Image (cartoon, rainbow, N blue to C red; front, side, top):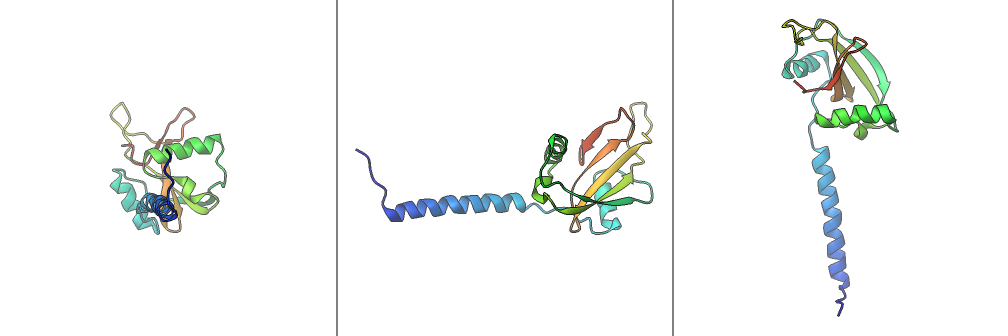
Length: 146
């Protein structure tokens, strides 16, 4: 014999489900993004990752795509591995700051020369980025891979 749920119980169940969705969304968005509002803050972030950079930076305005292609989706998958998620910023304007990393160790015991760190900043917050070797056969890794 089937039991029929009474309207107040149905409403309570729906309310609990809705609250669960809201709480989960708030928990995911509650992560505090690093301050990237000025060069000093960005350099502090970089040093917190364990790197040092040459003086100077380049900056270019970008737009995070509204729809992620295969390449950009793979890039965002890399971001997610290191605690960032660019999908939260689809279609938004951003600034990409690029720094030359001076102390990325190479296997021979020295340091690579062609390593760059890109920081993607939206509204003064670092929302993603990467560390890459600019050589043709280079590599790319997420922020915090060290």
